[in-house]
Length: 467
Image (cartoon, rainbow, N blue to C red; front, side):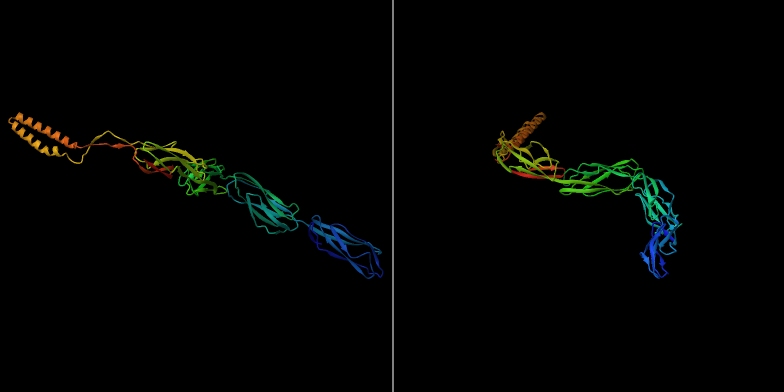
């Protein structure tokens, strides 16, 4: 039968039994020994001059030369008749050298190491697959069939994706008896590992356009090699500052401070991204926040009272979109000699429920002040007209009396005194007495009540009529 792969069956070979006599030959049995099998069409007898056939196959169970016998037992005088059978059982055998690979300490990539596959058997080696464990890779030049004594090369690389020891195998699946054959693989990953803490950030509700207090994210290199930080970027309504250097040593850490400034109302999202030389780059952290707001209202919206009385109003601040910030209260547009007093000057909203604050608008009663001199309808008629004549008479009297130097000086002193008295009298205007009223003036006023949170201001108005 020639060469036959062990545990496989050969094609059938035919043996013919011929009855060369003239009488029938009874067939007692047809048997085969060894790694052979037969099937036949001879039946219980073979008529004179007739023949039958037996088909024999070879299925070696081990490699090497295999022998057997096909025996016909019948009624012929020459019985039993025999046919010698032989064949060569073949089998591939795989040798992998070396039996193990150790890559030692290595970063993300490193040089390849080789394994030589040899078919040391006497049959063709049919390769089904060559597979490395995770964090290892391979390339090879092995054909699908490796002839006896044939060889091929498998190149293996170590690609650690985490720091620490890594072990695995290179498996070769084929038609050899001990398939799959394997090579032990090992290495120690020396890598940076970027870790962000916390894993996400959620900011409380902030008014539109108002920047929140910062929240910190810590970037830590938990690996065994320096972490090279290429870029730190952020998206959405968020901003960041950081203390991270371009390279972070093993076990080193830096801080990223993130703030939230909503540009709209409702849910707002963004992402912090860190590009580096660690596995899984860029690392990302989910950011979320809410753009909140509030409204202002007052009740009642109008009030009438007399000067000296007050009006008590209720101011309501209502949050929306979960706003829970502080709102400072103020009023403007008040009439003279009035004020407004809030029960509390600010409120901190709870994000869901309205908050009421009483405000009292106080006025001042109007009264007449004591009389004071005021300008009359015009200059005093008679005193004003006679003032020049009086001054002229004083000058003549002074001249008449000024015959001596001492008399002249006295005359001029009298004249100066008279002039001062006249001017003082003129400044008083002579005039009338005026009553000046005080207190809150009567009228209708629109008062603005405002709430301020950061740069956001909302207001409401109330109409006050003062009688």
